[in-house]
Amino acid sequence: MAHGSRHFDVLAPRSKFYHGPFGRLCPDLDPWVPEGVADCDLDKFLLDIANDLMVETPGKKPGEIAGDDQLRDDLEDQFASNIPAGYTYFGQFIDHDITFDPASSLMRQNDPNGLVNFRTPRFDLDNVYGAGPDDQPYLYDQNDKAKMAIGKVKGNPDLPDLPRFQKRALIGDMRNDENSIVSQLQLAFLLAHNTLVDRARKQHPSANTGELFDMARKSLRWLYQYIVWNDFVRRIAVDEVQKCALQLVDTCDGRKKWECGLDDVFKWKHQPFMPVEFSVAAYRFGHSMVRNEYQTNNPFRGFGQFAPIFDNTGPADPDDLRGFRPMKPENSVQWDWFLPMTCSRGPFPQMARKVDTKLANSLAFLHEGPAGDAMNVLAFRNLKRGISFGLPSGTSIAKKYCLKPLKLKKGEPDSLWYYILREAQGNGGNTMGRVGSTIVCAVFAGLLKGDPKSWLNIDPCWTPKDDPLLNAGKRKDNRDDKAWTLASIIRLANVKADGVGFDAPNL
Image (cartoon, rainbow, N blue to C red; front, side, top):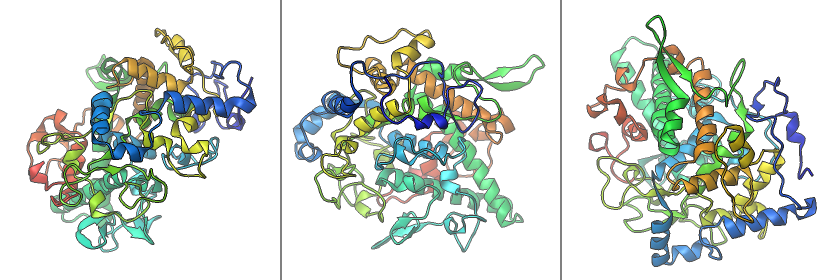
């Protein structure tokens, strides 16, 4: 029995000979559908799973959690992972770089099969640079076209914001303004690029604008790629799988080259494609890491004061962290509260929620459509999309990879997305399990290897400590490659110590 629309098969057919922007890791496996559920009952079946099995605190609206300090503490004890909260939104930022799927956004309700314009799947920061200064000049500083345009917070001109026109951000991907945290991460990348332009100009005073831009972009792209693989993926995947997926090996003639150890999982011919098992299921593990609320900064909101991630009480909440509006000082991100830095103290950084089957209550009350609309429940939306895209079951993929399948309890769905969360839950919730790690690591490694301009292909033995622009700052501890993490982007951004971060020497 086939449930839901299946016209996506036109874009990602099951033929092993198909090569295009979309594809499948397991075209030979049958789609998963819940047994004994008629088409007319499917939505209710999935909504019941979402509401009964996939909510952190069943029966509670997010506003009720926000007003109960004891409940907040209990949730922290029960659901907090060892992954700093900033990586939740770095994962979202990465998604927006390698995919162009508006329906994947937490705050978007779209046709679940409506993926027609698909970004080239590369870690190339086109969500930052757009089509470049010639084709999208409004993204760039008109007084120095090698730099990105930067805006100011209204009423507090010392605080930077994304450049805006009629309150909407002028950036390479609008989805990077959908909440205050990813918005500030986008801003950090813009500022980091501008820092690298200044360094390039100092080191190469005769270089023209285009050359300065290219030098800064290359350094930032390669640092970003390095951090994606050596910091982000290492935190969220099983260590053995991450190490196996991408290896710098010696050749028989004394050279070195990168090899993808999981190329039996993710193969491509002329250029990488985006597998739907990854984009519709495995990479959505990050939805379970979202917290209901966050402490944002000390100067403007204050220690111990929490802001809900999304409007969750009805009408738009001026204090929530929803985006697509100018930044408020209260919502600006103090990064040592979100990432581990040398200046982090006390209860900081805040930690992401565990990777498990329980989603924050805020994600069951998105308020994107009319009251009672099932599409306001993110877990329902993800489950339904998996069926619409004809994804195989988690059990069948585990068997294909010769991994021991989970023993799902009665009533638990074998949806691939749910299975990956359930597997991570059995793994302690601090990383994905084997199936999730295999899919994510195989795809990330394949995308890096498939990008002809990545450091893996241009300069395989490169590390950030070899880059003269990256090492031109005051700090010396980044001589150790292990010190290059997401916090390095914040250091490059040189954000000030009055609410959006800290001066570079203090990080």
